[in-house]
Length: 303
Image (cartoon, rainbow, N blue to C red; front, side, top):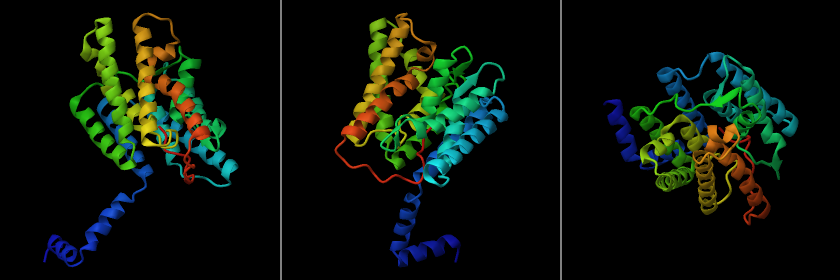
């Protein structure tokens, strides 16, 4: 009897076997799924487009993020928490941060800002900013002539985008935040169409950024961060739409020549989340009716 036949025979004789196996597969900690997805994005970005820009950037970013997480969590909670959050932040910083020349300091400062923001800028023991979003926005605002953000380097290759979106949507569904991703996507397409029509611009070039790496990381790792989104699906959708509106307004002002800090022109969605996200989280924590969920062992699963 072959292994396949044997497995089928056992499953047939014990109907609960397959059900328990499926339940075990669904019991996988979502943090591992998110870490796997960000690793996939890193591998695709590096081996297809060589976007890392030097492995010393990756190693330094990961080292700073994990070391900062370990030290601060030890002082804050008396133990070292799960470091997957720091791992995700380190990879995201490596992919999104593009310093001038061969400078490495943005990865040191960025890594420290990302992780420390979780322990310093918080309300009722919940951090308000997505860590990577906070760090990159701060770098862009404070050193716009020294730091830029990833834009077109990933390209708009169909196969690459299909792979990222396929696994991204599956994992977002598994984690329970796919409605956030889809709400932002729908809002972005609608608002972009309105803005393009108002300005007399062709539609496709205006839509193209959604297939780029900044928006992919934003959609799957930042705006969906379980530790910084508000509680309740309806409120999550409302906040997501507001962030999309702010993003569109930033783009509209940029198109109309309104003088804005370089950071707003370089990364409209990141700055929109940086403005709206913590305000929404604060009011949700302060005035939300439902009790807070028990705090997990990790500091979150940010980008």
